Length: 97
Image (cartoon, rainbow, N blue to C red):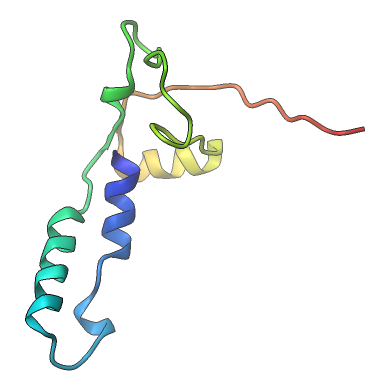
């Protein structure tokens, strides 16, 4: 999932964060995280697309297979990374009266 790869990239250990000598185990962990945390190039939602363009697959679960983002956040991420496909949704706000 693109979001997970982005999170791993952001959270990956940086050499400047922990000065000093590292153990062999630490180096292996850092190497594994860096391998898994390569900067994602484009947003890739293709595995979520159903039979028709813009349609989500049936039986996918929000916050497990995908995240809902505000329009402002989505537009910012899309402007930086591009990619797709885009699945537009309508947000409904409920107020308790």
